[in-house]
Length: 557
Image (cartoon, rainbow, N blue to C red; front, side):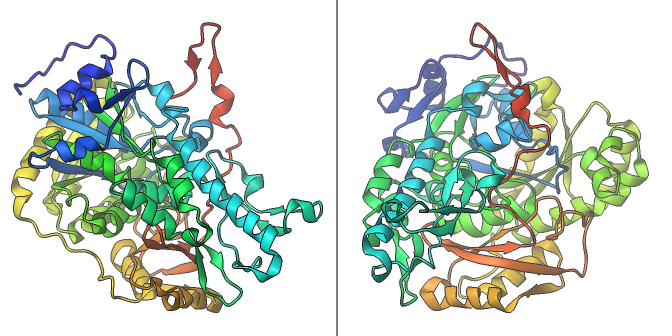
């Protein structure tokens, strides 16, 4: 493809044109209206070309407003296409929780967005609802078995680990009691709700390579324990077939486009602070089989989404390691990590940029632990000053890392050309790099947690109550010891304390809970106070969303 630095943009193109440009066979395209479609998984077997190069976008520790990873990833793929490369973006689909809660939308921003944004932010093609339904079907089957078996059956009613989910922030549902009202209504017991993005079914959905793998993983879900203490799996309840039936159509990746007409696969949406934080394996694999360069985004910073991408997603063996990792930085986040309050982040403060730099420095180190070439992208805001940018450039020089400013929010792909060129150069240099996992699977679970804590977070060690240690040791006894660990912790700090900013050193990571995602293939280890069901903020984004008389939606960002 020749360079096209000024593409002709006249609104979204029919999805048939985007699919044709990407190389999807027409018979494998199932359209959802004019601008959305699903790609049949049979297209994967048609992709005989050499897979494209993967570009992973992560970030430094974010402010509560986020640092623009998704916007950067979308603008970057537009820039690569302007440079004549065949590029696509593969990212997560939004959860309704953040859309109506803190974020107000998750399809990029400004001139670097995927469209149709309102559809993608809301019901899209129904994948989130399918995942919610499949998860809750299993919960209903668990309670049905308890009801008919009473206390003498397969499941111990006091040791059920499977909760319900919904794709909405609702704090009052975190802990509930079900089955009250008499024997006709089941066995009374304590349980609760998590958000769909934290569901194991979501994690399985995003890690399964095909329908067969999806069903097998669902069958391995641990829903609780028997009266004798043995794990009880979804397959023991004969739930795997019906759950897979609910997910069959959803597993096909969704195809949409950017504002500049670049192909975008938007599929799956696990959170990175309480799950593994990456779009579906089948979506990324589909894109790699069709494009020369695929940009993907991992949730939050390198200590969360990126580490889990390396140590969990890549262990599936379904997609290759990234050729390049982009670490998105903002002067706002540097100043925030340097101790500046949220309300003062738009005020020039060169000293705070310097104080907060050690946080970015640690994220660069984390990427290099995995042997992946790194490019720092400064996502520019209108309030950024020349003095602050100069200070950051000076601090980066001793790091010997590639750097570029990104203005994709205001300028689209044109504002990402310098970043795209740095990434192409880094990708060309990185063909021979060796990718190491952070720890071997044979290592005990507690040692894996401590390895992540020391190497990625910078902790001096880990600590926990005896009951938590015993819980982790039981997971090993039950046969789950050789799984990777998915650490659930705050996204606002490298530590487990959201108020511990900058680059925390010599702290102790506090492990507060642990459970198994046997079907997904990892153990979840909770550190500090982290909620698997978020609550709405004082002024939720939902209050600003409205529908005009003509049906147009306002207020979704």
